[in-house]
Image 1 (tube, each protein chain N blue to C red):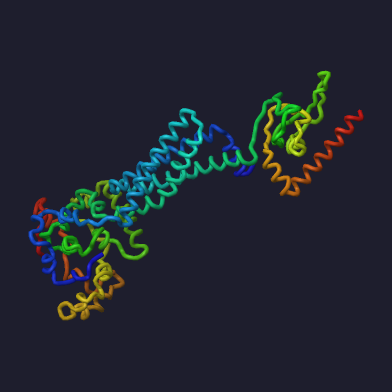
Image 2 (image 1 turned 30 degrees about the vertical axis):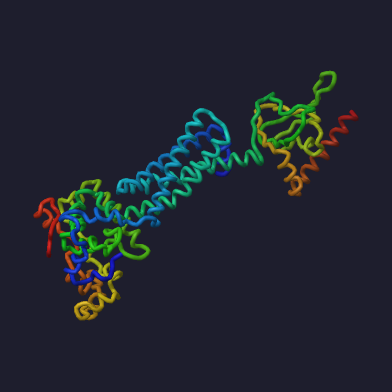
Length: 261
Length: 193
């Protein structure tokens, strides 16, 4: 989730990049590896799912082969019990967890190839000054950076995001212009301030920066027009843009953009 | 015939049980392969396959396995079913008896072979009637032989399960006692004549 210290003072973001860091255009991910932590619940779930799935494949194959050869032995019974009952029962919840959690990763969102290229390349570029890039390169959001800002928080946020994701998949399969990167992706609606404020609101820096400007506009930040769903004052009015636009991306060719809007 | 009866009849067929286990194996194989790919190479298409194919396949594999396993367990531990063609001998006089039978369909003839070679028909039993219980109660060898008159389907109860039911179910106990009483009367009349 986002660290609370990146809410303002946009230039400060770049100061947090290590001196002598990656060459321009090099994704920050390349320097993460030596420091990458292990042993999270998702790591365990992925490892357990892998082991269980392999055991299930072996057991199912052995069971089918022995049955075809007409072998009747207690060993076949044990293999069937493991492969056709125990493994699927255990794999069902763990596999669900592992699959859903891995589907929150940036690589997963990026796997829709061309459509996501501009956004991901811009986000991973240390030279970019867009909001997404500053959150990514400074590790304000540790993991699942797309998901953290684009899925609503709360119980139904993840479920809604998955339903939308399946709709995106349908567009991708049917070759919609937005999915192929030929057309700017349309927003569902105004970006909700609550998605930013979930992490930033209440932090010392958020409250005190620029003589408490956020306190002055607090009511506007929290007020939404019921007709349009648009906030009276959007975070992105002062802190945007969140991403590079398709027009900017096309203007700069395929290299990572160095926007400073 | 209720849906449960139909399901029970379907599962009694051994070939069907083998096919169901094979189907369970194929479903399990498919589900595991898609799940493995979905976690090792996350992507939208594999996620969709996981949701729409792998998850139902996992549940199907478990369901098919359970249906077969429960049927086989009940067959091994409790009442099982056997089928005989006309003329087949179910058990012979003098054999040790460790099972009791109930006629589910068809007719069974109870007969006694005289020393001179003649065959004496003791009784003809139809649907719902028991036989073979005397050897279980007395621990003696079979006192008569039985054979199928035509195609016959019988439910078979082992000694251990018979004793459990006999000592714990009063209705079952009473029906066996009534039947034994009737048999004794028949033997007395037969002896007199």
